[in-house]
Image 1 (cartoon, rainbow over the protein chains, first blue to last red):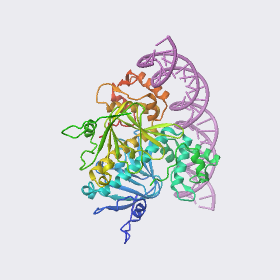
Image 2 (image 1 turned 180 degrees about the vertical axis):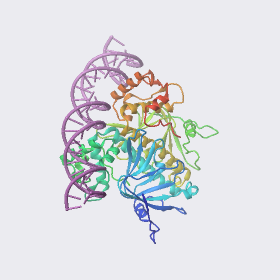
Image 3 (image 1 turned 120 degrees about the horizontal axis):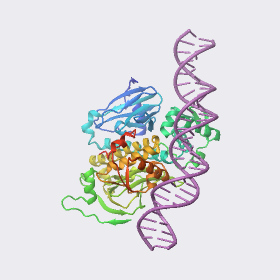
Image 4 (image 1 turned 90 degrees about the vertical axis):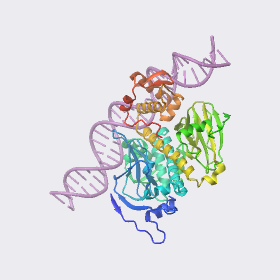
Length: 239
Length: 239
DNA sequence: CGCGGGGTTGAAAATGATCAAACGGCGTGG
DNA sequence: CCACGCCGTTTGATCATTTTCAACCCCGCG
C-alpha cells in the first residue's frame, strides 16, 4: 500500500476523490468548520485496511477507483464478503461488525480517499449536517445489507449469480461490464464456492443471457430477460 | 390488531413501552420540544405492519412484548426474515429495504409502542439528539445485519441453528428460554426450511447440547460448550 | 370424536461442495 | 526468445448436505 498525493484544486478545495464523492453526495464537505484531514491511499489487490479503534471512529474511506470489499472472517478461516464497494461508496470502520475480525480489502488495485474527522469529534457530535450525512451512509448500507440477506437466504446459486451479474451491469453506465474481482471473491460475496460460481457462469454463458468477451468482461444483451428470471428487482445504485 | 391505551405516568411522561425503551436508551425522550404522538398496538400472531410511504418516514415502532420480524417477500412467495425484533428493539419503516415487499410481522402476540414524530419533521431534521438516536438505531441494525449475512453465507445448517439457540438464550436473562416462533419462522430467519430445522433440533437435542422441555422451551446446560462448536462469537444484545 | 395446525421423521431427489486434473495467460529467469 | 512455473479458471467425478414429498403424531378445540 502506498500513499498518493492529493492535489487540492484551487477553486473548490476538493481533492480528486472528493470531486467524486461530491457527485454521489457524501455530504462531508458541506460541513462548517470541520478540520478534515485527507490523504490518498493506493492499495494493491489483496491489501487490507483494518478497522482500528472501536468507539469514536470518525474515519471514512471513499472509494475512488477499483473494487473493494467489506470482509468478515471466522476463526477457522472462512471468509464472507459482507459488502462490495465501488467508486463513490463510503465506508466507515464503525459500519463494520464488532465480534469477529473484519476489514476492508482491495479486490483489485484501488485508490481510496481517507477522511479523518477525529480532530473535530466534539464539534461533530452536535453537527446536524454531519449526523445527517452519516445517517444517510449507514441507512444506505443497511438497505443493501438487508437485500443481501434475502439473496443469501432465499435465492439458489443460479439466481444469486444472475442477480450479481445484473447488478454489476446496472452499476456500469455503458459498454461491456468489467469484473474487478476473482471467482473466489464472487463466491465469498454470494456464499458459494469458486468452482460453483465458475460452473454457473458457464451455464449462463451457454444460455445466452450474458455474453463473455473474456473471463472478466461481459455484455448483457437483454436486461429485461434477466429481470424476468429473477424473483427480485435488480436494484440500481439507489441514490 | 387492536389499539391499546397508553397511560402516561405522571412524573416521567413515559408510557409503559417507553419505560422499556428508556432502559435500552432509544433516545427519543431526551428530545426538546418534540410533538410525539404515541399509541399502543396489540398485534396477534401473523399481523403485519406495512411500511408505508417512502421518503420522510418518522414513525418508529418499539417492541414491548413478544417477538416480531422484519420480513421480505419475493414475487413468488418466498419469505426471508431479515431481522428478529424482541422487547426493546426499535424498528423504523425507513430501516427496511425498498424494492421488494417488506413489513413487520408479529411472530407471536405482540405489544408495540408506535411513536409518530412526523409532526416535528422540520424541527428534527436539525436536531442533533434525534439524529444521533436514529443513527444509533441504524448502526445497531447494520451491525446485526452484517453478522447475519456472514451466518447465511458461511455457516452450515447445524451451525446456524446452534447459533440461533445460543443467541436466543443470551437474550433471556435467566431460566428456560422460550421460543415465541414456529419452526417455519426459524427456517425463514436462517435461510433453511422447516423440516431441516426440525431435524437439526432433534440432533442437537440428542447431542445433549440443549435440553428441550417442550417444542418451544429449552435450557442450555453449558453455553461455553456451544461456543466451542461455533466459529463465531455469540453476540449478546450488544448495547 | 373428528379436524386442523404445528411438529417430527423417512425416503428420494436436487443442489452445492470437495477433490482432482487440466488449461491458459503471464511474468520471470535462463 | 523460450521454457518454466504460478495463479486463476474450467471441467469432471464423487460426496455431503439440504430440499422435497409424504406419512404420521400430538394436542387443542369445536
